[in-house]
Each structure stands twice: as structure tokens, then as C-alpha cells.
Length: 266
Image (cartoon, rainbow, N blue to C red; front, top):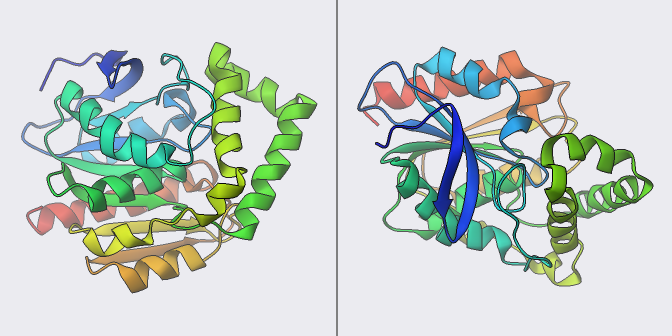
């Protein structure tokens, strides 16, 4: 594995991407790879990477996709297929550039969907386990309603100012790329449930009971369609981001899942 610093940049899929890294306490173990949400980036994981690192002893690697955080810009408008592009084209190159051979993919929202497509869409992949927080496998009315509400908040300036702290010059692209794709009428047909039966590694799926972007129908689809071992967690007093709303509980549930993977020799 290349010598990674705590913060830096790597080159993948024609873009310069920022990354953050916490070294593990032992070698030869999987790396936890964080895949952020539709408005996220490295910095927006806050203390979660270090908490996971301390709880598991594993290395934790996260990066900002193109157009987010301090990564290089992408190009607007984003296609409806942007999560497929990230999963099948960009993520393999990122893992290769970072020297990640075996990974527990921890994805949130869009990141969880990207992890799903990657693990179910590539026969040869690095995933040894998936942690899917607030995953989207298909489009729900509640998702579109909340994303339209975010559009109004961004246009009013309130959301823009809060995002600028994390995305700087990328703020407009980060928001318009994500928001424009989801509100594209063609996106209503977006559906990745066909990837679920092809997942061959254990899955932990978490969703907040008060998630404003999705319902329990997402986890129900996973339970029906995925043949791999599944653990479902519905977290009370929690919205769309379990690692922010219930950090201690989320860290423990994820760490316990990873410990179980190790006990099973994965």
C-alpha cells in the first residue's frame, strides 16, 4: 500500500481528488473506505473516521468525489448515470491509486448507492463487507420532495453559506450536480435493485427512523432482493445521517459488524 499521509491528493479517472487517512494498528487487514453523501466531502464526515479507526483498529480512508470539497472540479450538468459512473469507473481507480486491496465500504446516501453498484456490478472488486447508511435503491416521492426543498434553501442563500465552508469554489457544482440530476424527470426511473442479488459479501444497512430522504421501503427491498447475509438497523431519534445524529451508537453498530466479519474470517 502506498505511504498515505493524513491528508493529501491522489489522481484517479482524470481528476485530482482530496483524501483523508487514518492509519490502522495492524497490517494485512481490510481498509474502511468512506463514500460520502450527495452534498458531502472528506471534512463533512467530521469525527466519524477517527472514531471508527479507534473502535476497530483498521485504517480508514475517505475521499471527496470530483466537484466536492477540495477535489478538482467536474462538469455540469451531471448525467442521470452519475452514481453508476462513480461506482464502476472512478471508485476502482481510487482504490488502486490508494493501494486498497480489501475494503469495508461505508457509504452514506449517494455513497451507499455507489457502494451497492460497485459490489453488485463488478465481478472482481475489493469489497469484503458493505455498510449502507440511508441507502437509495430506487426513487421515492419523499426523496424528491426533500431534494426540491433543498433547492429552495440553496437558492435563498442559507444552505449555500453552510456548504461553502466545506466545498469552497466547488459549492455551486456540488449542489447543482447532485440536485439537478435528482430533479431531472428522467431520474424518476433510476433503480439499482437489480444489483442487490449480485452482492456476495455481508451487508449492514442503517436508516434513521426520521429520515427525511427515504423510508423503510429501501431496507425492505434490500432484505427481499439480496441473498448475502444482511443486518438491518433502524435508529430512533435519527434523521438522514446516522453518523451525525447518533454518532456513538452508529460507531458501535458499525464496529460490531466489522468485528463479526473478522470472526468469520472475512
